[in-house]
Length: 161
Ligand SMILES: [Zn+2]
Image (cartoon, rainbow, N blue to C red; front, side):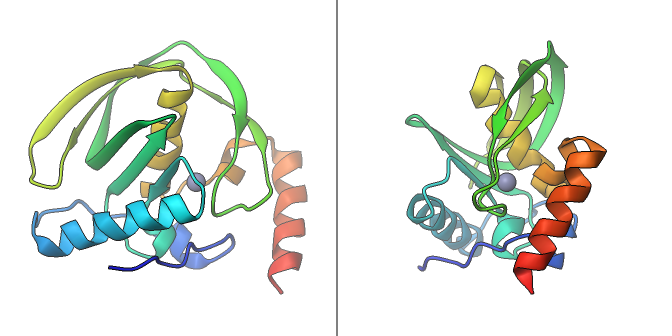
């Protein structure tokens, strides 16, 4: 059990699409445990497995005490639109306004493969959607305007050198 390194943009592993979890075994449970530890120590409200270099569809969320483990999450429905500020552990110090659906319905599995369905809204829904983006290799920087994206990209790539 250990805290893992959170990968920072432009690390290419963040651009790898994650695969579905098919084995609900001890290896998955160890990954989930490490993800909780890593998220808490990094003071994040959510963490997706690709952010620690593991290309699997696994997410942990703790937003104001509401904790969720999402394995193989799927977006079933979404409605409304809301703009709010968003950050990401893979973009330290960057906070950008992003427009996202206000209400969503999602299906997911737990570490034993049990399926659940849930409707969430507001900022909690935003956290779900942000983390689900990571599974499809979509990042915060892809959700901002083209001008902003070019500016951030330059700035972050320069910082990484
Ligand atoms: Zn993120």
